[in-house]
Image (cartoon, rainbow over the protein chains, first blue to last red):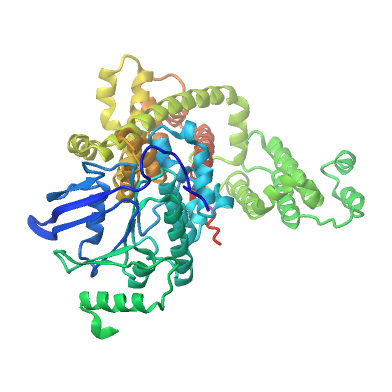
Length: 264
Length: 338
């Protein structure tokens, strides 16, 4: 229906290619090195929707921080569109599990944050309302974050990212804290946004079903220090159904990989 | 309007008769009770002879009675007072308590002479001071206000800036934190010799003392506010393309503002408490100076009168600060959810 949600560029493809090359990472814990990621390698093509699954605390969020450029990897390198990631950039944006809206700013001013930080607010002002409308918060532009429900706050956080027209959207369990009904609705919205805007999406989730409903590919990480244990193409058209036998089979396979087959 | 013009303040019966006809009219009971008590305090002051020859007893009686009469009128007008009435209504318990306090005070000191003199002064001696020494008190209030405002604004600005710097930069914190810890707890009097030596005039030395006293709590609270900002806010801003300037001014500072306002409040209180010390360095006018002068002459009536002015100015400025805070921190209020 709509070609691109917020057309800003016409020169480049809307999605970004991401290459993770033998990335290892460790934390310093009381002077001892705590390994988190162990030579993780994969490539994401422009416009893909990749879900990252793995046991709790395996280093998924750490990997996302490296992709966002918030921390440098201990070893290996990350390439965004064939250029080494050296720091954060508005073309690679992150949506966290907590909306972390700035409580002193209204929804409108929160969404405007990126444009304001880059000095584009004056020329690109119109994009703010567009992004707010896009996530269905049209009537709440003047509301403060404490006046929003969890789902609305997460929508605002999504708009805050989308207004910058990111080429890679990094989603760190963005629906993890929502109630199950809101969550189902927002999975559909997320999918719609991705289909329309064409950005590359990298999603960390604990919900296998969510990964299978949304992603074109599912990467499974092992326990810490995490290595890539499986790279599964989902290969089903949208909209998908939760009881699709192919997806049910994949779900079983992933549970096996995570060592939870007995619980199914 | 018609009621106001027809009825004199001391003629409640006429007011009652004139206003009873209005539809949905409700008098303000609290105001009537408070007014009656103030009228009673006035009558008591006028009728009961003083135990000693205090001046201004009759003037005080008129003042108390007038205030009581005004409250009675307000009580009779009730609902018709509109906005003013809504603001007055919750004050009734205080108005009643104050009337009782003034009456007890008047009886204990002026009528029965039960409290040792000259340490206690009756209400009428406040009136006497304000009438006979009002001009000088006003000059002193203005002088103190100027001193306080200058010192406080300088102190708050410098305290805020250094708090942000210490909270933000590790290098500044390395040097600033121990200094702040050493200087912070020192009493202002301790700085008197240095202030005398380092500043060209006694006025600037006083400004220094007030700025120091008010700046330190502002610095400490701003620092702790900036240091305590959720690091996720910085992550968000950095990924969105924010530079260091944006991170300080648009993330750290607004996130720390609730703390900053606590510091500003504590700084204002500290500024008031060092005012007397600050005016010891040789200024020629000011409430602190007036207090010392009155105490030196054992003019305790003058001292209490000046203290009352000081307390009112202080609470007025604190109230003003709270208003500014409520406006700036409007995002914290109103936990309306849907």
